[in-house]
Amino acid sequence: MIQTKRQVTILSDLELITCIVQKGFADDIVHAAYEAGAQGATVNYAHGSGVREKLGIFGVAVEAEKEIIQIVVASEQVNRIFDAMYLAGKLDTPGMGFMYVAKLQKAATYIPQEVLEKIEAKSRV
Image (cartoon, rainbow, N blue to C red; front, side, top):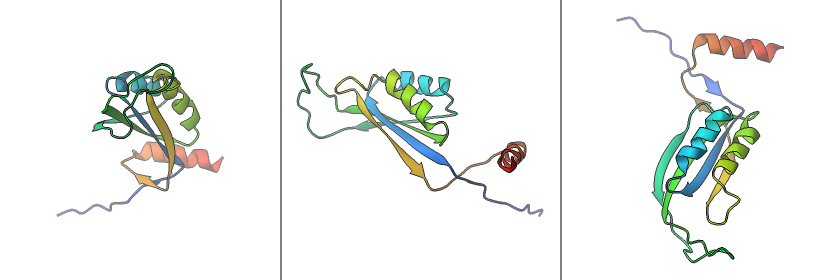
């Protein structure tokens, strides 16, 4: 049996954008995130709870069915992608949703060797 040396590649300088929106809006938001430079997204479906009365002067009822979009991005990309998602989701409209960013301490995934070498070379400059 041939055993190969395995190594964990730790990623840092990453942030997690989480966007919670009404059911049916995730596709447009994810598309905007991709256009702004995001590499991937995870969409989950959820059922919200809490105050369900009408909001503001528009009288918008908040639906219980939600889509939760999570995107891990480099810290240098977070503002651009966050803004694109916010605008695509029309989160400046009452009852449309909520977004936040959380700093990640560390993350790990497979990264091809040539990409690692480029990152290492860039950090030496």
